Image 1: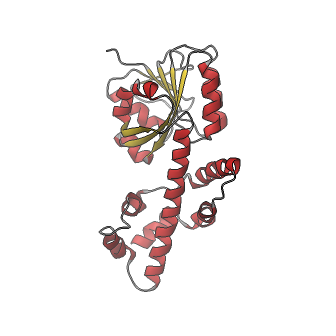
Image 2: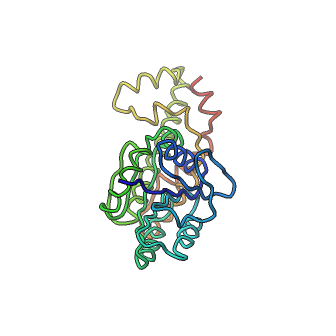
Image 3: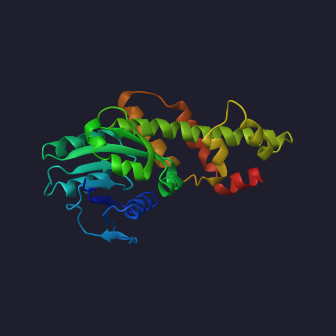
Length: 257
């Protein structure tokens, strides 16, 4: 079976490692990014020649611009996977537009961060037709440890927002608890080792000092906008927004010694 040609729109912190992994595993990869050139990835100005396009750009307006460009003119049978963290309504609207041209859209939210992208261990939260997602199995096997189809287009973004809310709240709670322990003379590094053997163990607890804490404001903004649409309050998210500025790479390094 012939492998699909894969286009990657956005070769930044996440899209770059994903494109490099795919190229390293024998896929023909086309890259759309005016600022980045990667070994093994053919730089192009348009991605219409790609069978599958992974959209890994920063925000809703960027995603809309990329997908609109792909539909002008459309390539029937192409699959567009929106891998950015954006509003579910953005994905659903673009999917409806694309469907009229015979183009399939999935939202494929990425969890696992830069290290997951580099190591091919991302966890993919997918919204859309399971049969369309299955057409991307070979691609997903290279970039992720697994994927989960959770509902119609947009469901992946809902799941990513939920993941983000848990992630940032957990970071704030861990740092707060470590600071309290330190004030009482208990070393945070020793406390973490102890907690890893109990019910509060988590990847966040284990890998806190490896994190960059770069996207919390955007992630919370996206979740807050979603919450406003359905009238659901997010008090813990707002607390995370207020406290995250005190959680920096240097502060965590100092705390853990």
